Image (cartoon, rainbow, N blue to C red; front, side):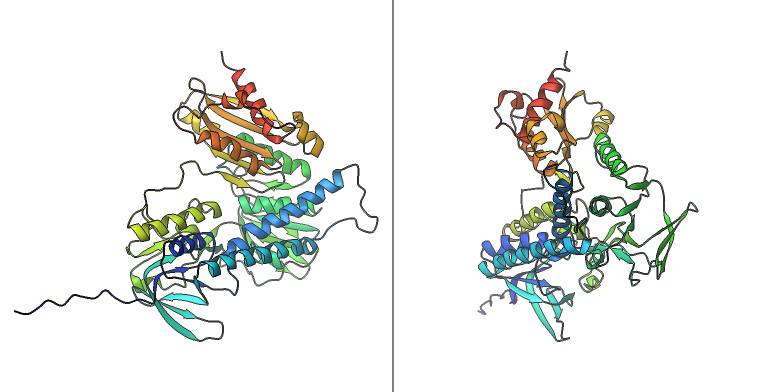
Length: 473
């Protein structure tokens, strides 16, 4: 009687390979490595961290911090600027950002070393169901394989074909970090998160800013009162906002750049920042080799476990679209790690993902907006606190801003938190922690019955809660 031979499982170089070392890639790599898997990551550049660390979140927020402190310094009556130092330049504040990037790279590199994750530097291309070809900077190639592949290759600024981004005066949100001149006038096309943040940065440096928005108001996804507050603050600071405009062409000249709008208007400035959308970095991966296809924005479809249509290939971060936040990408990566190891992950992203926009001042929110609650016919009430009434804000001379709490009139359940002002992205998390409580723990009355340190910005919650409860009858 013939004996049956046991079929051996395929042998791969690694258990899992992750393409990209941004937040999503790092989250997946750390989760898988801590689960005992043999893990490799492929990073196109010589330093880990992805676009988040090198061109996006970290440098833009570091620039914003420097400019914000500079504004505080100028406005504080205790200090006077040196007569020979009347303003900072963009190049000067880039030095601080470069220092933060170096610290982040060292920190993130240590994570991979400590968890024994193998790092390959080069461009990744899919050449088979489980195989990836790596092309290094010197042109040499090697093929590695894994049972599972995670695509976390991030995104890049959208570049229309009719815009010459090789012109030295035309920038996108990545190349703007190479700006070394001291422009007097900047046009920013695109008034989304990136456009608004850079409008704040340049205006804080005293640069004349034209912000061109192809929608009818700034940041339309935010609570309208909060986005209107930002719009007013921009207008009051001297930023010229043009709503409902679309560009027709951009003309780069030796002495500046001219934007021609479809409305017939023309605008001229020293340079332009084109910040109107992003595209997933999937076009160079040779997705066809495994039967995958990205949509027109370079994004992939995934299920609740972030699996693509090919079960052993996963995708996280900007390459899958919404919410396209570094914070969410970390969580997506960790969910993928669990799904790969256990076959499924019950954990999901939280329903109400907080949004922080690092303009000057910041804006941040979590939960429902007034417009959403009104459309859903949910009976809500509003509690407000103005920062100018808080002792801590008066001490710090950061009086611009407010906190708004939306809560159910009957149950007192917190439904939305919206904040405008310095440290808004931090302040919002206090309310988020209460908002996430179950079994009756989520109630605006918590802020009335707790004791806050004095003086703090957190006191805004008590002020807003009392303000809202006083509206009930």
